[in-house]
Each structure stands twice: as structure tokens, then as C-alpha cells.
Image 1 (cartoon, rainbow, N blue to C red):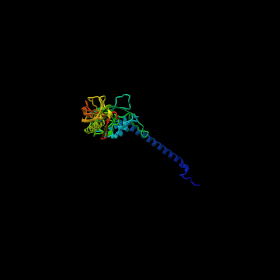
Image 2 (image 1 turned 90 degrees about the vertical axis):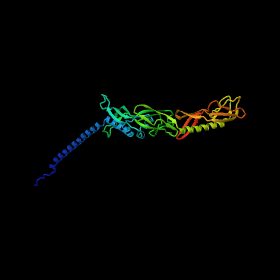
Image 3 (image 1 turned 135 degrees about the vertical axis):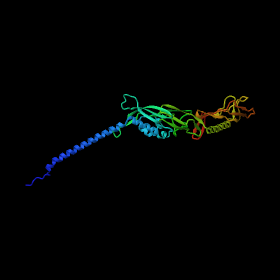
Image 4 (image 1 turned 180 degrees about the horizontal axis):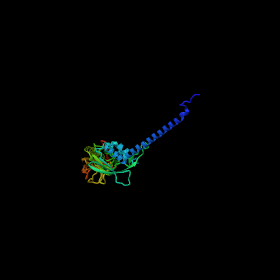
Amino acid sequence: MEQQSETSPHLLAPKARRARRRLLITLILAVAALLIGGAITVADVNASRTPQATAEKYFAALAAGDATAANALTAPAPGTPGEAGLLTDEVLGNAIEHISAVSVTPADTPLDSANQNLEVTYTLADHTVTVSVYLVEGPRQWGLLRTWQLARPVAERVLFQSNRPLPQDAPLLSGVPLQSPNQTLFPAVYPLASGSPHTLALEQDTAVVTGVDSTVTLEFTPTDALRAEAQTQINAMVDACAASTLTSTTLSRDTRDGCPLHVILAESGPAPGTWEILDYPTVQFEAGGSVYLTRDGRAQFHPEDGRDAAEMLRGLEFAGTVEINGDRVRLIPQGTQ
């Protein structure tokens, strides 16, 4: 009779089962170790993702003029139309000066275990500014890693007060037109310029936005080029008025087509005749060059019936608004807008 082989399948089956069991246990332990290690790693990463670290990144972005990075660290919120239009890289990046010497510390709030309330100090335009910020949890990255966001941007509501209407001939802030007197801006020192420098000069060349609600005053003054062009148009108005106004009256002022020419004749009753301009009136501006009027000026009426010439007792008065489109200027007489 043949002897049974030591490698018989009947003898190997228990050994194989034991080997598989050991391998399974090894795999389970390895996966458990990976899970535990991963959990520890996630916990370590989350421990470094603090509100303070996020705030430090936010203010570092403002210091670098990076509005996109700062906006990415801010919780989305519905805003007033037009308010956030200047929280951009174009505007912040072109600022003359950004914040510096930033310090971020937890606020002294005993119940705030996560230190979501922070005090931030920075320097801008030789001023030290302190603001309070609050951070909220953002969406988890990859479903695991914690993120934090500022509840609202550290941006100032600025009222631009102007001696002429805005956005008419809008001034430029960092090269972007100010289409509304109310704007929201990151703290920085921004360059200001006239939107129509040929006709309107702007006295201020910077806007300092510290991060606290404030007002910026804009003072426009007409340039010599605007005065010269307006005077040319006034003179043309006077000439046209004198050519069309052929009658004078003792009863009422002749204001046809906005013409202010009138005299009182020695004898009663209207009289045909011609006007002679002795001196043209001088144009003046109000409301930052958005309104014009005239002063002085002399005109004399010559009746055709032989009566003595009569001179106006008051100046030639014109008034209206100034329309500026780039370098083009148009005087619009009052009542014809």
C-alpha cells in the first residue's frame, strides 16, 4: 500500500486557513493604523487651521494688495448693489499705500473658546488703526479639513461728498470711475484724479481709507480751458440774442429764447431797432463747474425811429448748466434742459 503524501490537500487546508486569517488580521490592523494615523493627521492639520491663522492670511492679502485672496477668505453675504464693486485687485492693487505692521490677537472674550473674536491692529498713513473681526466656520475642505472665514470684509463705507453732482464727470479712484457717492473700500490710500482733467481740476489727489466709516470731500474747480470755452459760447449766445431781438419795450422785459436784452425808452411804446454789444458779460461757475451764470456786460439799443439810443440799466444775465463730455463742453441755458 502506498504511503499518504505529507503535502496532501487534507493536511494543507487548516494551514491555509490559518495563514489567511493571519493575513486578514494584519490587513485590518494596517487599515486601523492608517485610519488612526489619518485621524491624527487631520486633527493636527485642523489644530493649525485657527481663526487667528485665517485672519493673519486675510490681512497679509490686504497688505499685498491682493483683493481676490482677501475676498476668498470672507463669508459670502448678500450685498447692496454697487457696494462691493471696488473691492477688486484693480482698485486695491493700484493703491498708493497698503496697510502694514499688522498684529492679530484674540479678543479678551472668556466664552470664546475657539478665539473667533479677534483684535487687529495695523498702520496706514501714519495712523495706527484697531479693528475687531469675527470669524465663522466655512465649508470643510475635502469634507475633513476645517476652514474659517471672516464674517464680513474689513472694508469701509465711504461717502464721497462733492461740490458737483456724482457720477457726472465722475472722478477716478485707482483709475476706476466713482459712479456713486457711496462706496465700500478696503483700507488703503488710493489715488484720485479728475475724470475730465482738461476741463475740471480736482484739488485732492488721494483718498485715505483707514477702515473706519468716513467721508472724503472732493473739490472740483474749472480749468482755464473750461473758462475760455464757456466764455466763447457765452459771447456767441449774446451775439445771437442781439441779432434776434429787434424790439424794445417799456412795459416788460424781452426774454424770448432766453435773451435778457431790454431797455426802457424815453417815450412809451415798443420800437424796432438794433442792439449793440458794448461789453460782453463774464462767465462764472458754481457747484464745481456744473452751473454757469454771467455778471456785468453792457448792451445799447438803437431805435430806428430816431429816438436816442438807450443802454441797459443792468448786466447781461445768462444762466444754465454745464455739460461736459471728455474735452467737449456745452452750455445749456436755463429752461432748455
